[in-house]
Amino acid sequence: MKGRLLNAYAICPTYAYFKLHYPEPPTPSMEFGKELDVREVVEEHIKTKCRVSYQVPLSGSLGTGRVDALIECADRVEVVEVKLSEGFLRPQLLQAAFYCILAEEALGKPCRALWLCSPSRCIRKNFTEGLRISVIGMVESLEEDLKTMPRGRPSGYCSYCKYAGICPWKRG
Ligand code: SF4
Image 1 (cartoon, rainbow, N blue to C red):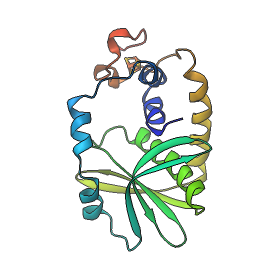
Image 2: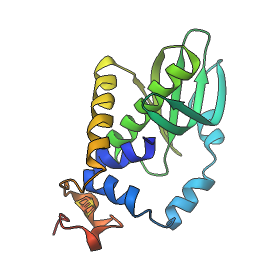
Image 3: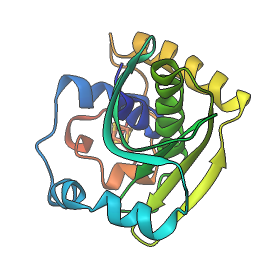
């Protein structure tokens, strides 16, 4: 399982299905996103004395992913996800929580917090047991829903969705 699919799944199950089976070509905003200077965002908005690493590949029993930044302290880790926009905070939160779990396994330290950043700000959230349980449950249902097309969850996102042209659930 990949973290980016969990993010898509939190937006809409059908969107995650399409994303896996019909990978979209990079859009201008995705290209710009790649050029986002994660280090600059982190250094401006997060004050820490702990070691910070960037674009860290992680893997564990739940899957794999590449976290934008990993903060490693003596007794804990924290993860940072940086996005161009400030929208879709719940999907971003779940993706970061997924990386928290992978980081715990990889480094053998508890993940205490996750940071959701955009170029203008970073928000700190505690990594709670409730969030952990949500992520594990979502990974299980996502694995099942990637096999056959799941029912969509139409929303305002349909007007931006790259798959609206082929989606039977799209809104409007
Ligand atoms: S068009 Fe809407 S319902 Fe269909 S995949 Fe995209 S977000 Fe989901």
